[in-house]
Image (tube, rainbow, N blue to C red; front, side, top):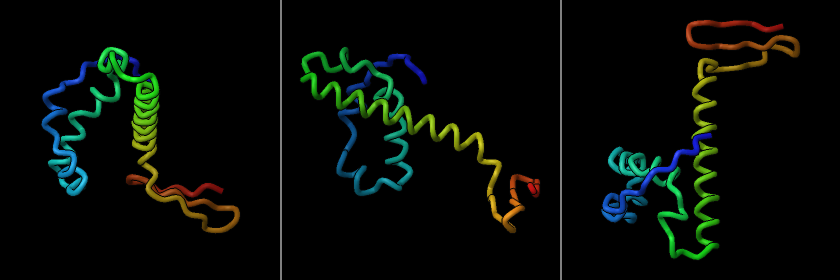
Length: 107
C-alpha cells in the first residue's frame, strides 16, 4: 500500500460544510468534496498535522487512515475482477461465468 505523505489543505477542510455533506451525500457535489480530501487525509502524517494532539486521537486517526487504505485496496481489487458480471451454478458440476463479451462454462 502507498506510504507517501501528503499535506492537508486546511483551507479546503475549513470550507467543508459537514452538515450539508451528511444530508446530501449521494449528490455529486458532496462526493467531489470528499474525493478532493481523500488522498490528503488518507496519506498525511498525523504526527506532523496534529503535533499537539492527544496520542489517543493520533492512534484513532491512523486506524481511520488504514481503514481507508484497505477500502481503496479492496476497490482496486474489485475493479480488476469486474469483468466477471455473473457467476451462476447451472447444476452441481457446472458453473456459468457471464463476463464482458464472453460466456464460459466450467465443469
